[in-house]
Image 1 (cartoon, rainbow over the protein chains, first blue to last red):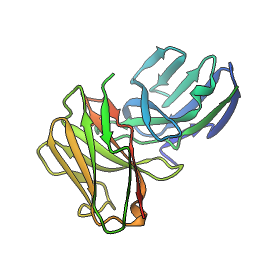
Image 2: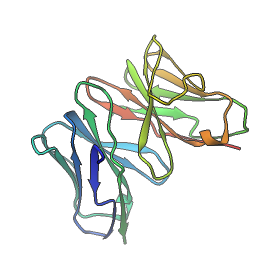
Image 3: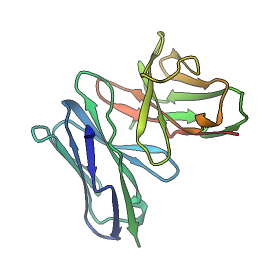
Image 4: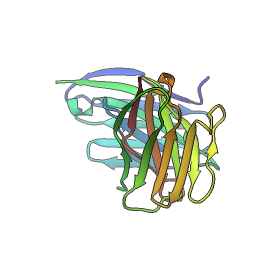
Length: 109
Length: 114
């Protein structure tokens, strides 16, 4: 079993839909990072959180440390949101990320 | 947010040559930088951790003589792929640690070895 599981692995949505991507992990962590990788490959850091909830524009990230679960929500999705979204917990006591395999999102106009 | 740059963004080279990739933190000092490799449709794989002024720590299975890492200053780390081979073709990404838990990722370098 992978230490980080993301679901769904692939997601196609219509423009305007509300999107949720889930991440579950099995190790103790100090923080969790949500990353966005566009088709060209470049990685953008969306959120780093260790508790509660963070919001930036149309993006919301939540984490429940006790349940070892985090979610990334996109409201009013847009085709430009099409990318791979990667959950990356930071293993407790280290500076090493454990990367999920990513969720490939495609938003259709 | 903090910015990390990589240069070049794309490089094509012949087998047997060496290629140097630079990773720079543009607006902060990074005591630690990380180098990752990503195969198509796969997760990032940590190759090595680079601390300023000291030798890099390589992950298991990564050849340190093939992937030379130098972290000469608080804003620059370099990865040199020596005697490149087609199997080294990949997407290489660096990240720089800003404070305790925050890491910022570079845009990546796509290496193609012919």
